[in-house]
Length: 73
Length: 504
Image (cartoon, rainbow over all chains, first blue to last red; front, side, top):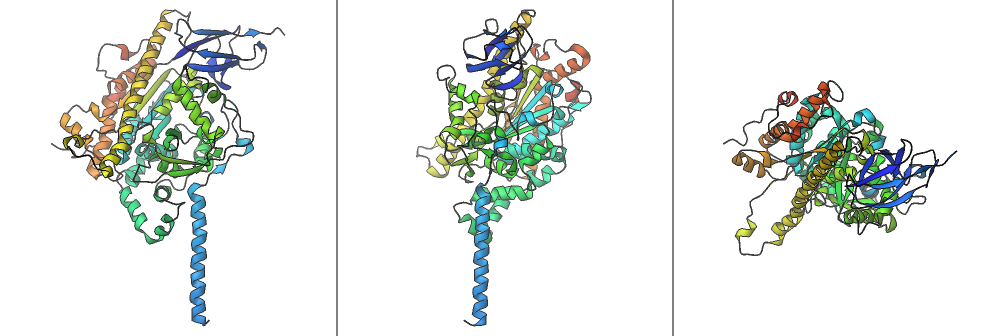
């Protein structure tokens, strides 16, 4: 399994490959190795709109990290 | 033409017309599924109406203790063994996460192949009625004899001569009438109850697993709701050479069908994750390079233990376990493996083995057994990886927030029978849909006993008892360096009488 940390300033649901689940921001997610497109649950007040990444060679102490930033309203 | 001749001619015409009408009905019944309507199409994430895990009742609280069962193939032997396990689960009283429940109440999914699909489907459809009449309606019945009787019935010769109606249709019709009472998946959708039952067959065109879920039926543009449960069971248990393949129509390409992101991204993974790459490729082949038909045979050809669907649900980002992982605190996977080991008599002779039946049987079963080892090993490795990740996360004191429930992977097989002579007797039980009653009775007992005595099952119960006592979050009892646990819940399980078989 591979490890992914989705960083955002709020606790928010994470959407992986267009699918919603119980994944949350700021927690390490576990996924099998491979290519993913990651986004956040609504509202669409964050940037970028989606991030493509390849998960490979991660460990729980060195997860792949992606960062979403909040768009000021 | 005399009146008498006219009457004979008229009768003949009626018979021919009736036969043609029935033939048309048989043809349409043999392969008919309903095409997905526009309002039934899934979205890019794979969500939509129909028989999917997320459309069954239960939420966060029901996910805390997540239990999945895998029932292997092996004819009545597998069905009886898995039934014995269900009897034990029904008596396993637990007080966490909810008080006064049984472990059977907490079962969230059952994945099955072949003989195991009879128990899985019957429980999925009738729930506790399984314990009232499944033994009489299936386990102790001569199913093979019933099929043979139908095959020799002259009226059926007519249908069997048709290229659109074959032995598998005869079997499916018998299961439909005599076991599943003409029920289809719409009934399961309407019940909206867990467990989510995943019956697995093998697509003999691609060699891949084909699961009877709406997620899979999306890919062939078809509505699983109208499909008879008996036909899914028949496809899952269509043993090579004895039964013919079962055929489904593929309605793809469907207008408006979305590009499913999980598989589209998987196509980029040839170098990162070949199993994901090939799986995505095989799934998208139904949509991108559609053949008009899908021919299905025994699920054991792709995975004879039924565990692969559960592993995929855990690993893949569109899997129903993966998507609910944050809510799951304890994940229990019980694989009931009715695999037998036959004596190698082929290697005793210098002569080249006969094509039929020796080579044919070996070809049909070698792959099944190899895949069984493969999937159990894989699940064990996964559990160990997760255990290490959980330990690292715990040591980081909150810096690394990881929620990864370590699965308790419990494999029940005849290997665990301590007495070698008794074990050998169980190994000798044939793969058949007609077993002597004393063997069925012994198998039901053995399923119950194997679960009750399994060390991983017992330490898992000890963890649940610690949880109920308010010690949730402490290290698992399974980490203790011992092999004997004495949880109260296991001691309360009373297994049914084993009968006299196998004797001394």
